[in-house]
Length: 510
Image 1 (tube, helix red, strand yellow):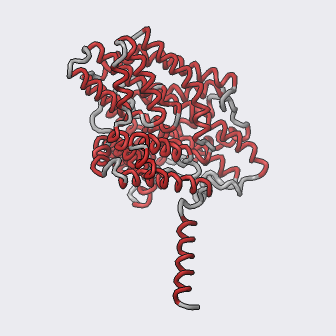
Image 2 (tube, one colour):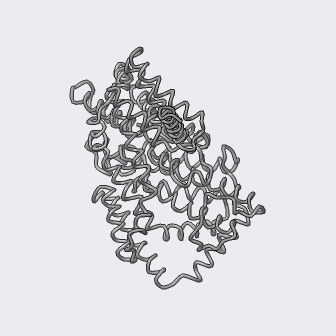
Image 3 (cartoon, one colour):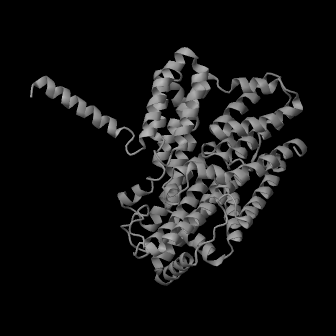
């Protein structure tokens, strides 16, 4: 074969290999869609301009998030962000600025999520007791939602979500081992592989997944119910409080006319959904699964050694340290998470590097994805995609501004990110106060509207809150078949009741 033909054949084979490797095992239609996005975006920039193109890229990025279970959004979303930089719609400097602004959130993901990993024995112990003692699904769901709300008022919602993920993965792993014919302690087990599962247990496994999905969603919504109420509940809360000059208690009291009615309505929604078994809720735990978990709890009690007991005691002390440190904001959340890692590993004897490394596996892919998200945020900021909305809001009568701001913040948070939306709007409102455009009393009303608007309606989609996106992209979501679309459907009744309550509270109580 001539050398030029050989080179052409080799080049053709190489191109086929590259094309086949592009986005791995993702569906071909998805790969083609991403390629079309990348080709069309520069053409649109030259024809319709950066504003329309910017909004299109935001929608394309949201599409990659919606397809998270088919293809982790880091690669396709990263390609869109990289293209935006190459097209000059944002810059590495702007991205770095967004990362620096949100560095505490990144530290939280790296260290706090890993810290929760080292507390999972205690958390699994506590929640297993709840599961085996509370036989009413309605009461159990209400307990999960209420506990998540209370924890989120003093911890960060991401931290609480990490706790929920660790606990539910523990439950799922216990039953999946048994359903696969293995022991509770079997180490070499892949919970995503259903091939070894006994055919007689498949139906119970499907019902157990539905049961866990409902618990997870009730608890996830609970993090939003509690997260809106205090400075430490969500990252943007601290920013809003600092701009307004509010202390912990003043922030709580300012939000209470909205946050407390929403909390009550949210818990009532939980009860209603479980009672009527709608929108994917109401599935009871199969008796065979409950028997396995009860047996697991019994065996754990019988086989618990003095060392195991001491480890639980150490973890309990560290939990008290964690709650106290976060409640009084003794340090950045990520730094407190690092302290948790140091304390637990030091006093439970975890010194092997590989055991330490496993704690970071869950959070680091999402941390990288969040950095890509900040690139999209930089694009939104550089192109001023939200400015027309802000200008239109200030042109409205004063009494309408809090209501409009609540709804607009909720809508934008649902399609982008509540931290970014809150940052943009509180900065604009503070600038208006400093310029004398609005009075201090109006500023306070708008600050309440911004905080509640970005925290409550944003539960509509997984990309509205970092905690929801973390749940969607976690290792738990594919195990219990919790997709983007399913999260949207399961959140819908909560969105309707909580948003309606929130806007009525803004109108009549604030």
